[in-house]
Image 1 (cartoon, rainbow, N blue to C red):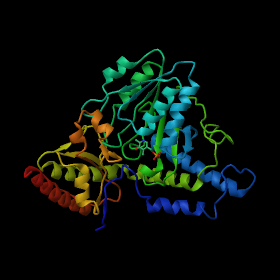
Image 2 (tube, rainbow, N blue to C red):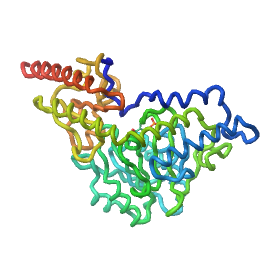
Image 3 (cartoon, helix red, strand yellow):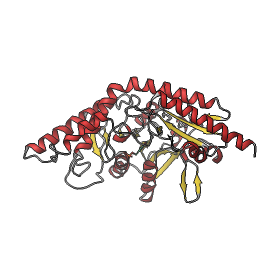
Image 4 (cartoon, rainbow, N blue to C red):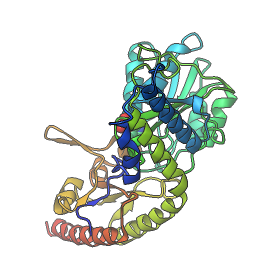
Amino acid sequence: MQLPVYLDNNATTPVDPRVLDEMLPYFTQNFGNAASRTHIFGWIAEEAVEHARQQLASLINAHPKEIVFTSGATESINLALKGVYEMYASKGNHIITCATEHKAVLDTCKHLEKSGAEVTYLPVKFDGRIDLAELEKSIRSSTILIAIMYANNEIGVVQPIKEIAAFARQHNVLFFCDAAQAVGKIPVDVIEDDISLLSLSAHKIYGPKGVGALYVRRKNPRVRLTAQMDGGGHENNMRSGTLNVPGIVGFGKACEICMQEMNAESIRLKNLRDKLEKSLVELNNVYVNGSIEFRLPHVTNLSFNKIAANRLMMSFNKNIAVSSGSACTSALVEPSYVLKALGLSDERANASLRFGLGRFTTEEQIDYAIKEISKNVQKLHSELSSL
Ligand SMILES: *Cc1c(COP(=O)(O)O)cnc(C)c1O
């Protein structure tokens, strides 16, 4: 069995060997610049990029011309939010987002507030989903954009995307969706889901780090953006800079594999996730954080009553790689803002761990994790109760 057991696939995933194989020739013999129009080196690179664009578009049911390649979801989010804010300034300055969004969304919104934007940060219910009635109350005549993620990176909770999209359309407001955790894991369809802009990232779906994309709807309505990177006018003037051809080729292949294997993979991982979750919840005082019904199949976020996540991780740290949402800033442990937004106490938030299973997780590894974690939880609980 492979040790340590990697259960932090929400943070990043390993590159699938099939993806790497596709990429390798584009570092060496096929090294051309996709923008070189005068020779075969450029044409080969351009053809590879256009093939990848098609692979991405297929996975989310978009048109290839609606895909803008970037350096990752963070850049795509910046381009979407800042690009829309600047382009639609004459229409209004109000953006609606949510308290549990990724920092890339929240910090970009904070940045825009400094340049005059008004931002509503919707709260979430105890299950981690927004309240549609709250969304309705927050809409203004100056609202230009609703930015709500598809699935949360810490708790895996899936938002009511179709309902949000219908509301946005009814009010003639654009809908941006950060789908970095959802694409390739559950069906995402920009037409069915009626999304105006959508961000995705290669390294969350077994592709390389440092490459991402933004879907920008071309019709009904056509979404326009102010570019955030000026230069040679690449990517239809929306994102200048020489394209990362090997990265893009890998991203395309990663999408193709997800398209073929997502259904079977999500069933396999859901079974393993449920086995892990069920075994751990059977221990005393272990709870699932966030909606059980509306969430990604490979994720569970558990709180281990009163046992500090850092202590628990230390007890098996070398053999099991998981994450606690909390960030240690100097000596202080800051509880996860996502778990706090669900209404969890600091103590319970600090006693929480995120488990993210992935393509290369085996049943043997899950059995090992169950045994190892159960043993340590029981030990730490009995130490606590003997205090
Ligand atoms: C990972 C992630 C991002 C950032 O993606 P990068 O490609 O690493 O910049 C943004 N949003 C969510 C929900 C994520 O999980």
